Image (tube, rainbow, N blue to C red; front, side):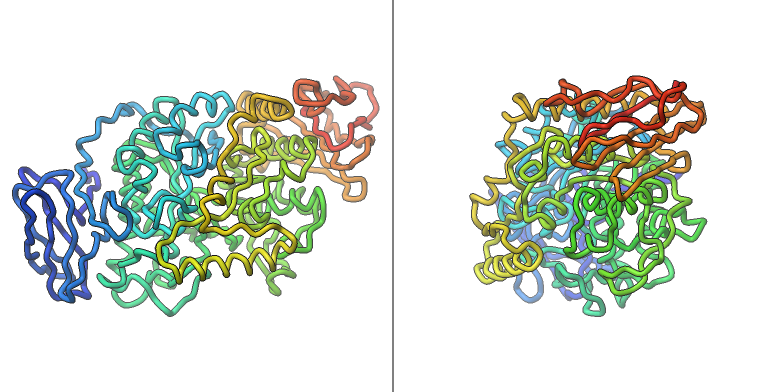
Length: 615
């Protein structure tokens, strides 16, 4: 029987002391400086493979320490479990066995049952901590959410950041509540029946407080990323680097009981070795989950449209469980209005949306104008549960829209129609915090760097990006505290009209999805779509092996019209429609029953959706 994985490196509480182990092939000598009432410095013993180790008796959890290098530098631990004084301060010893978990019976949630709610810890509540998320769990459960996705929480500079500037990848952000705060949140989620997805960044590290290069060959100049030096996954000395990141995935799974990792921008991970790092990580991650007796998943963010990412390893794939489906978002976005900006120029509204709903990837090898080349591979044989679809996320709001929420620009009707397409699609749906009630607070890019030159570089870079992609959009200084404050949710909105109506629509849509076999099964192979780009309507039909059937009829046009509904021999009964008075200003309902000697033309109100169940 295999041993359940445990941390080899860092500070491990053992008996009456702490064992410190460090991988530092670039150093010749290392000491541990231990703070406290009786501070001391202890030399570490070198071992094979660039490792250093020492056992310090009389040290316990809560002690602060640094590594002293042969060059006279005092550095935090690369695998620090806690950075209470931020990225430049000392590391703190944590005993993972000291936390009293209550989720021993938790086994996780099947992939196809996930309804994910992405949130940013710092802006989700006024206090911006892990603990303050917990009182909102009943609200999320009532909404129909089965998993929360935390934007990255690895320690970053300052107290406000999106999280993609993290540098201490094993240390939960101190301003959010540190290690125990995150554990309390995960434990509370599991008591509520909610899974936890953690966003992790394995393609780069942030620029401030990044000391890894002083210890070993973590970075390479062989490849370039838009965000910083590429990680050295396939060059000289990369064995220890690969281990560092694989063990980070196992660490979150094991010590924090997370249910899934969302792997940020894997197109920025470069590895041309015989076994891709994602293959290695997926194999180790799934083996550890099996040892723990839990369901656990890896979900990639990828703009490669490469089905190898999510194919099983025995079929030549990487074995990642699922990936974000950008093509769905871009198709639905242009279904409301064409957009020539950047990647949106490649998508043709309803034509692309119909393909995305049936196949997954829209681009599966044809020429992309945006990229100037052929792009993608076919995902037609990949199950629907392997795709995470969304109409909003942190990136599409904060970057593609300059922080402006759709609720600021889109009608209530458009918001409800988009929600219906998302929640009744054959994919795992992801909501971005606040979209379920039409949040009007923006989600802007914000930082709190301590280096003045870096602050100015980020400010000017961001100003240039916004000006190029979003001319006319107000530029907000990322470093200014007011930018962060403006990104916090307005929790008083969801209780009053029109926001309460949108929230009711989302709740009823998630309930319908979870309660009907044809909507809950993620069976992309049992999907039919028909659309008319000229008249701007789309019909999505979902099936199930049990014989259950559901049909979503959508009118994207700004005027009422008759939509030609394909009956396929099934009579249909109206379940819900977006123009019901419960969800906002009412409009004329569509026919209550269709398919039994009635006309095939269904009268639909402008910008509306109607859900029918087969009878």
